[in-house]
Image (tube, rainbow, N blue to C red; front, side, top):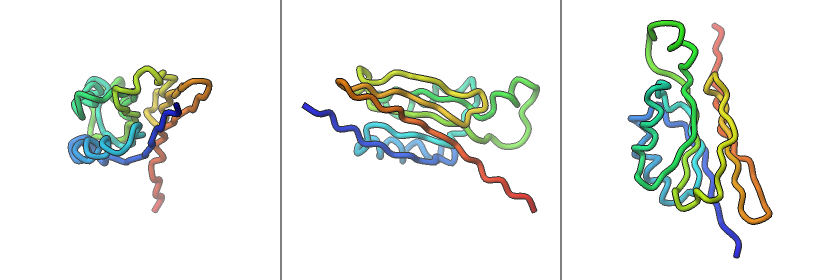
Length: 127
């Protein structure tokens, strides 16, 4: 029997503003690649509050700034991948970069495997 996995990429524009949308999307999608959750490194576990039925893997976009002193300005960046707990047996975390711009998991179902990558490409505007 083939396993069907539905994927989606979504920019949260902040955890508080995107959480309910992600919760709704999990009714239709197995895996959601998230960008811009805006969570600090010490708050990444907040991703587990999306739903009791979700697992996650991700990184903060503010790790470097948090380690160099007091964070100034608003929160920014961050990437993650969330998936339905029913698929835990198929998921393996691979890696997240320290800048919080790339995160990867491996989905292994039978003799097939797929890498799912969430990448954040921030806008650069030089006026």
